[in-house]
Image 1 (cartoon, helix red, strand yellow):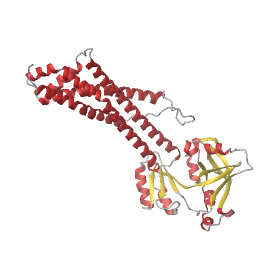
Image 2 (tube, rainbow, N blue to C red):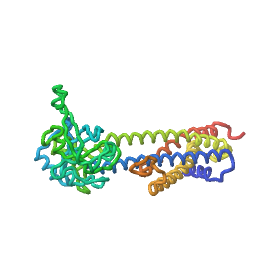
Image 3 (tube, rainbow, N blue to C red):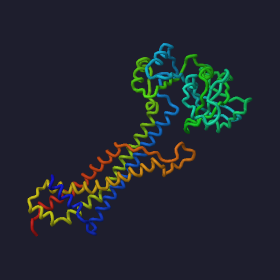
Image 4 (tube, helix red, strand yellow):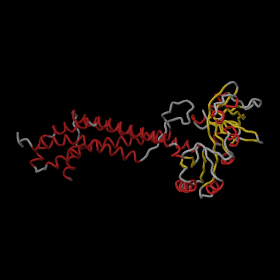
Length: 411
């Protein structure tokens, strides 16, 4: 092993002649370096997007959410609510009733998502920093108000100064529709005034309105304790998995207690799958680029033919000769890979620190591409380089052995 490594280092680190073989070797190193750099940066961008999404979820999603496995609306007993609130680490238990409805204002209409929230939601100040205009409240002196997403507010042309024309919310009367009574009683109607504008993210802003919980129950003709989910906020530093297990024991198997990531499992899974396919695609491209390594080693075998005869006379074994060219292939690829990882890390740090490449999306929440570098991506990239290098070096190494041991030792 030491002899093979010594000869391989001599072949690799010896002064390169101005020849076509040295040019191919340099091109192979550059190709591997560029591919590694691109792969590291692309994976870091996907990590940044995933991290950005998770940070965005923290803005408006609860730490834990309790939903029914079979019903869109349910009720928890006062005893269950009290037991959940007494679990160590739970800071707030919030009742939520959420559904879609039609709103009308100033001759315009739009289907939105109305989210009925209780006083504990407002008291927790979860979205206080996202209020772009107006006040952070959904009820004042017994009158209902709505915290309106910025997109809905602008699309409907709402105005805080218009105190004579409330926003009308229309919701289908399920009981009337069940008896095929298509008349004025087929939909429930209630009004509210906008109290503030919320600016969170595009999907939220274009469809969400926060309204009082009891007002929402009256609109949907729901029971006085009906909710669509319970949102639970935890104290800082609490292990959410431990609290999740404790709440699951309290509510039973007919309910699901979801963490923030589980609430958006489909989106996060899509990001991971897309990252995986990009990784496979880039590995395939790296495999194609390794053809230059294959040709470089093949030409090196031909160039070193006389040297190989000398090594044969010195008593070199086929296994030693095979390892020599495998090591040369590793040296060529890893020199490019190390440079590529260094460049990828450097460019990633510059983007992460200064944001030199803009996202190019008007009114986006971030100005530049997010970057999050992880050691696991560097490790996987190194493993891919090792595998591809080994596969690309096998045939030239075998040919070197065959050419040396299957031909006469002297011309």
